[in-house]
Amino acid sequence: MQMPQGNPLLLSCTLQELLARDTVQVELIPEKKGLFLKHVEYEVSSQRFKSSVYRRYNDFVVFHEMLLHKFPYRMVPALPPKRVLGADREFIEGRRRALKRFINLVARHPPFSEDTILKLFLSFSGSDVQNKLKEAAQCVGDEFMNCKLAARAKDFLPSDIQTQFAVSRELIRNIYNSFYKLRDRAERIASRAIDNAADLLIFGKELRQVAFGVCGGVSALGSDTTPLPSWAALHLSTWGSLKQALKGLSVEFALLADKAAQQGKQEENDVVEKLNLFLDLLQSYKDLCERHEKGVLHKHQRALHKDGLMKRQAVLNREPESVEQLESRILEQESVIQTMELRNYFSLYCLHQETQLIHAYLPLTSHILGAFVNSQIQGHKEMSKVWDDLKPKLSCLFAGPHSALTPPRSPQDGVCPH
Image (tube, rainbow, N blue to C red):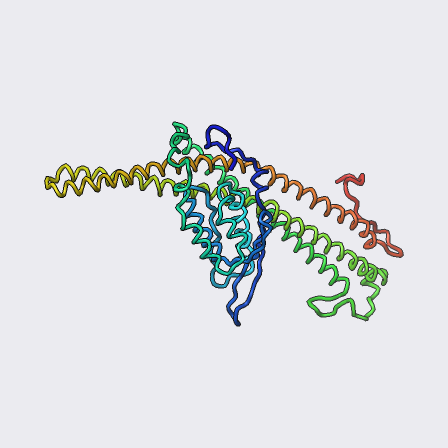
């Protein structure tokens, strides 16, 4: 974490610098144990550490727990849900994507990226990685215990920190809600492209079935040797010519389906996944705000209340021994209160930095929009070329030895749309 001279509260990191910290790939490695039990392993590869290790989902769970133990006042992204009975490929693939987003956000987070437990998780190749992670995290205290500035955090906070905290929390809540809706629309757009691919492919197959005279796997007109009566067709060669033309067109529709499927997949990977990454980050900020309010702030207030009760009891109690015991407990409680107060200010200190980190990620919006626009341009350009190549082939459908039929002309060919 780059800190300028002066106030260490201020961060100086750009989106490019965050993304350059590391890129981690997470790939599925399914394995079978016995006849029925099946578990999934992941190959986790880090560019930064030039490492490739195998991890189970439970390894991610322990790593996540140790991050929360060591960095309770930082944004720790949530893990995807545990495996449910009858989990299908779609669930497993969705969880793989979520784990990839999780580990990349962690690997690029300034304090996490310099911690030993991240390096252990990404590079330790032994079989007992969970114990190694617990040893590394539990042998030392949390970030408050190890940060030299923790006891002076209050000195660096602005006087209106509570107001700033409330405003930032509301702003990020609104950003989250907007991006959640954008993600849903992007998913639907990508899904429609994939559905369009399936429809185009079926359309082409139906053309081919017409050409071969096959319906439901049963040979029909294509193998029927019964001559067509003169009243059914003016020229006996028309149907044969049409079949040959339709066979060629089915190939073009298969190519169109492939282009549409590519566009849908590209939008899933480049648009939807980036939106999900940003949403995961924003959700971790919302979770951090709740931990602050329900955790250290609540404990501090509860300790103050307990201290007040004990002092009132000391005033009412007239027995000397009891008074001495109460005074000792009051001193101990006041020490707890002081520690809680310092932790509360350190929590706000970290929250202030995490808010800056969110704003450093905001330019990701331009990356997402750029990926969406490029995908649309490239997809429509490629499909337009296939449609243009297909159009001249339609002339075969209207060509015959004595036919005066011609392909229909579009308005841009100079024909009045009426």
